[in-house]
Image (cartoon, rainbow, N blue to C red):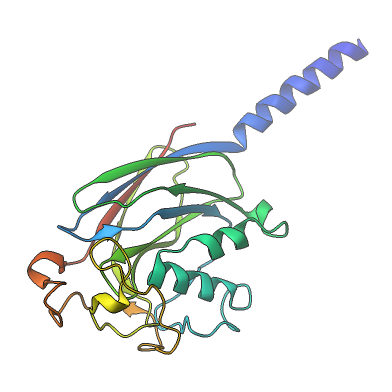
Length: 228
């Protein structure tokens, strides 16, 4: 009788375990003509906003996690560098509050990519996504603290943001990536000093031609489907 009770308890435990974990498929579509997105980080997390319009990402003492997230977003926006944000998410004190995946490679205009987040705990109810836009000085796409679907699919349209951490010179000397190959970061240039909607490419140089590289919002669409 005792063994039977134990088996019933184990069965109920397994069922409960399967209920509190979810799998998601995330499809990211680049809506622009010629802007490329650097590798995308997709994060399931407890409800918390990574940034807000008007934030000063140059301030590495304020914001989420005492400035760590500000610095990580600055690295993404200026260099497409996911290293700092991954290092944060991998911290032992943070691991239980996040689950993340990375969409590797550049995502050119008009293309889409699908990634999956598997075994996501039900407490991780929200999702964020970040990537740099090339060729820009500090332009980035952001899905910030939006809800994951409990069933079916949900679709979000993403605008282009300017991190406000580097002046929009549009000079290839200041822009990394395959078109320009310039310097990723500009430590002596603090830009506008606040996050805002990106103003687009204005044709300040001959290389980054607005006829090819300018855009209108939204610049991306993200479709999230719960598959388990």
